[in-house]
Length: 197
Image (cartoon, rainbow, N blue to C red; front, side, top):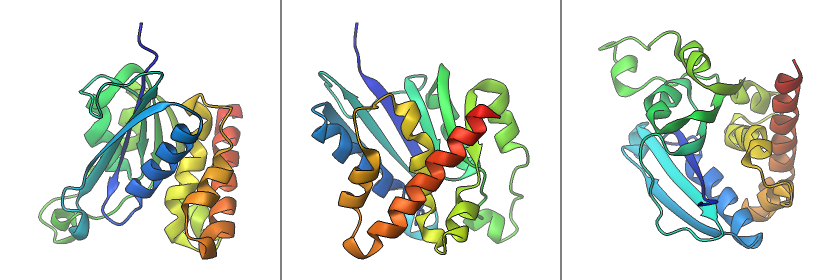
């Protein structure tokens, strides 16, 4: 039986989805896992959907998996959580940033942003929901929202042997290390608090 784990990360262009997958990949490789990563940028420059897939285990044969195969979905935006929900196994876990970003069509008034995205996910899957943007803003920089979100998901990755905070610090530019350490810790603490509630 395969020990491969599959994670899909989803967000909107500019949210830092690819940075999170890079942090994850760096940590897993250093821990000795065979790791494969793929990226789908979409219309990233225009606020379009962005997703990446990360797979790891003792032996991984390809970077891409299909619908119903993800163990974990990490969504940086709530509508993106719903968009990529078909990739989750029924037993999968969704880590959702309760945050909405206007798309081109919603910003222009051509369509309305859908209501009930988080609630729909909670009905179908085990979820961890937090407002990473709010937490990042409290730290003084909303741009570290992605690392807050990564902190929230790190315990469900099932890799306690990896010092994820150190991996974050080594992956981000030096001038942002302390901010991202704080962001990681804040996200991890928020997820633990939600789990105990």
